Length: 307
Image 1: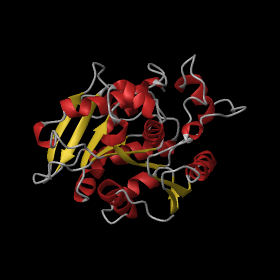
Image 2 (image 1 turned 45 degrees about the vertical axis):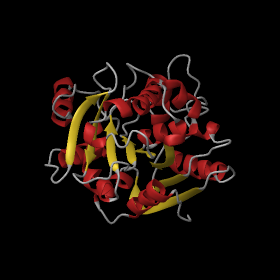
Image 3 (image 1 turned 180 degrees about the horizontal axis):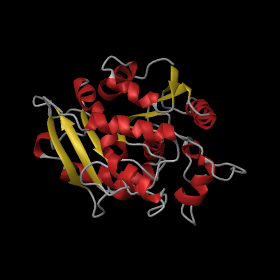
């Protein structure tokens, strides 16, 4: 049995990456196999730089995608991969590259340290460090005008949506890392997990996995829950989740939207008809998906659609 698992992991791990622990469900394994298959296909017509470091850990690397004729002040979309904070690769995001670039944005797809080897808040701190490092570590063709503030949009799927939202809601951490929180002009998390608290998680459940693997021994679940940081939010947000997403994800998104709409920044929320937790991401392979229109509105004009 152990050899079968090892073979399965090695099959899914992209070249240059260490194998990871088994994913917790068949649906997650199928999703990973699909998006990594898409990632292996050539990315044509784009400028691409891969595995750029923003820290010393092997997981502190990012890929960047742009058009050859991209304006020097183009917005930057930082899209964090999912994987329950214990799994996942930046290559989960590769299939979106051409579609994001078509909106007039540069795509940055980062990796980050994973639990249990690096429990939360490690991934969150990595995100803040990435934002601080971007002006220095981006390739010359993506650095933009030195005298122009960059517009940064944070996004991500599942655990990546959680990280994107928490970074948007924690300007104190972003500033402490050396980045400018005012550069963040929007956040578009997809199927994000915004409430890590559970009063009595069942043994073997995903909720129990959070307490057993994801949270550090001195890290409270409330501290890592974006729901607890919504007060005074100034970042426009567009939330999205699937009609057939988990109850946990759907409820936390509904509560998050209610809290955000009571703050100063605009917020919209959309339910993807017929989609489960993984289809909310894989459907973004369609360049006509409405998410890209929402992204363009926030990135270029600071507008949030009604929803």
